[in-house]
Image (cartoon, rainbow, N blue to C red):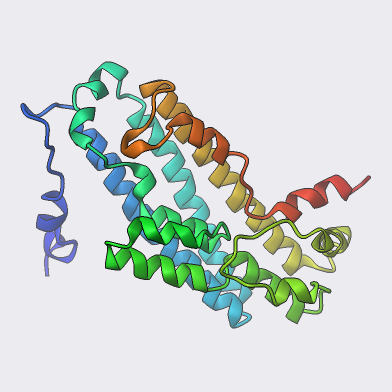
Length: 263
């Protein structure tokens, strides 16, 4: 066994195939940026799905370790935008046309991460119906309880009064704000020492969301820096879509409770 053999470097390093002719210097940056993002997303999915399994088994500590790893990956993904931001509008324009209908909005792993975090949309599967692997990954994420669902179920098993309607909800549907959950979190935060495990878990989820929003914001600003307000590839609306995504929250009750604390 060698380093190159273990990592299958011949396959990995031959996967960057610029299509511009003559080959544009900066196309390799664009490809590497997105391929490494997909590799990190693969690991994020692995960690989040494992965290869900551990939560189902009431193994909170190792589940939080998985979440902690995801948080570090998120920071890496956010910082990675600074590399792509070195691509100027003029440089990108020279090879953008060869992307055709390809777009980052078509990343099924990104969609699966959003599904695992609760932003589910069954109709999204139609976008990937020609890709058996993507369909399988997204179907699994759609039909399984989200990370938030698993946390709430764990809290209920620990004796916290999570409303039955929340515990019995259709997990294939996108999460929507549940006002009856806010008092549950308010009681946890009111006695942080007495509810330390639940309190720490809530804050870990807030960290996840905060990091996700920073990643989205950095994505938006990088797109604006490179293409301004032009439509994105693949028919997307570009920066306008990314700006709307900043309004999305995975764990709205954990933000709503902050208004109630100390009020």
